[in-house]
Image 1 (cartoon, one colour):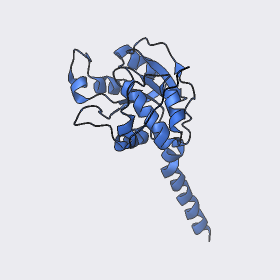
Image 2 (cartoon, helix red, strand yellow; image 1 turned 180 degrees about the vertical axis):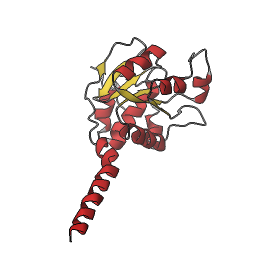
Image 3 (cartoon, one colour; image 1 turned 135 degrees about the vertical axis):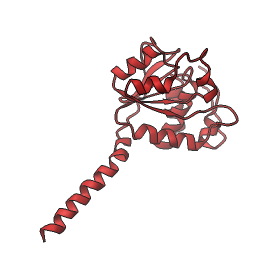
Image 4 (cartoon, one colour; image 1 turned 90 degrees about the vertical axis):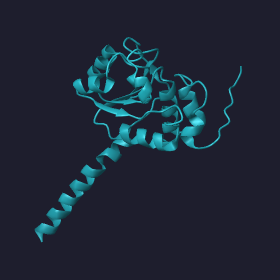
Length: 194
């Protein structure tokens, strides 16, 4: 009689352990207003999007050390292979530098004909974000693609309205609209002129 109760308890613990990455997803609470941070060590932009999510332009080695000290355990890079392999653009091997700092590296290359903006990329980002054991840094060269990715994530995975997500994006580096590709549908965006 005690054995079945014990097994149910063990199965319950296993169930909770297996679901914990999914439960963490609901803990990502995006800020309505991103917190702009000192850009030292980053190209153009560095901001906090949620308690455990940061966005930036291309980090330097110093920038990577900075975020590691801030609790970042995973870096998600949206730049293409071509961009990352050009040592004039990025003078170090980012994946190796991140590994040496004890962080995880996730590369979701976007931009160009071989790496288009698709809903699957947003879903891949969501999995990488929501399964991280600590804070996450999302980046590209100037946080343009990263801003679009975050906006699409807010709509697809946080059930935020497009208008709300766009309001957040406009505080970062939104620019023109690859968001159409991320969401898999044509969008009309209106800009309010005062």
